[in-house]
Image (cartoon, rainbow, N blue to C red; front, top):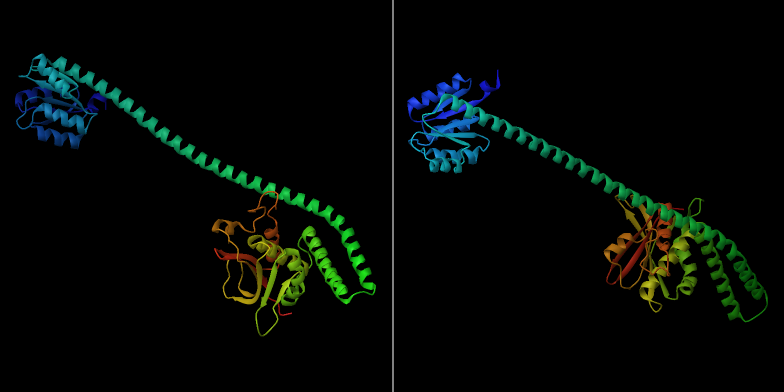
Amino acid sequence: MNETAQTRILNVDDAEVALYTKTRILRHAGYSVTEALTGREALRRVENDQPSLVLLDVRLPDISGTEVCRIIKERWPSTMVLQTSATYVTAADRTRGLDGGADSYLTQPIDPAELVAEVRALMRLHAAEEYVRGLNDDLERRIAERTSELRVKNVRLVEQMAQRERIETALFATQRLEAVQQVGAVLRNDLRTPLSLASVLIESALAQPGDPAANAALKDALAALAGVARLAVRYLEGIPDTPAQAIDVAARLGEMQAWLEAASGVKVHIAAEAGGRRPMAQAHAEALESAILNLVLNARDAIGSDGIVTIDLRHRQRTESTDALTAGAYVVVTIADRGTGMSASVAAHAGEPFFSTRGKTEGVGLGLNQVRQFAQSVGGELLFKSDRQGTAAELWLRASEG
């Protein structure tokens, strides 16, 4: 089928002779033609048939051809309109028709050759407009596809940048930890000699007869020095590789109380759960002492040197598992202060490596992280509760029957 036969034309005229004549001319030229006698019928056929061109008489019995043309161009702007008239034939009439939206204007009677030529010209224009419209649609489609691709690539780029930032942060943290470990190895060797010398001197003084009160003070100093030596090794060597043992936490806290007060400069009050069994926990003795000292020093920083730090010891039973702790029996050591407390954002990050609210010269943010690593290494966890009345750091340790 040729292109002319595929072109649908709607012929609108209430004069039957004129209608017949124009239809016969167009069909003879090979066009497919339908007819309408009124404006309303013409609008229905345009909506149903979607013709490429409407041959529209200006004078109709119900609606003027000019109004019909306006509606067609408003609803179906790609439809071509060729207006005809046997009565409105002046230049002003043609101007009004073209201003009303018509693509061309012919006066009747129309020469058959002129009508066919005008229709062909309008169809060429229609084809050109359709081609340009297709190019625009294709361009918009390609722009939408490209925009979607760029959006996906942008999301991937943001994810890659975030991943790179996480990797760089982890690498930086690892490098800092390695540096701390290297410094620790040097300090470990440098501290052994003065600590050993101080212990020998105190033991020598105790071997000499002297004042009982002074000897008692020297014994306390020797015990504190031994605790400091254990803590120094603990800080510089990390969590022991040896298996955790059953530790009497209440007894250990009693032994630590004096040097905890000496090291922190604050009064330390210890309260153990009354009654029944001793609170035994699975832990490493030196690591436990280090963790408790760390938490006491943090509490001291919150309250100042004239406050009181409370250490509470309890048995706890968890019936359900969480992300932090599995179900089971625990011994919980709670170090509490009456300081200013922590904000929700600070509490959420407390215990992360290198996170610190102190100045750069006052700490590197590893203390609480070491405590958390110790607790997790023995199946426990470090949790925080804080409000305006103070902070409670809960050191959860697996209970032991040993």
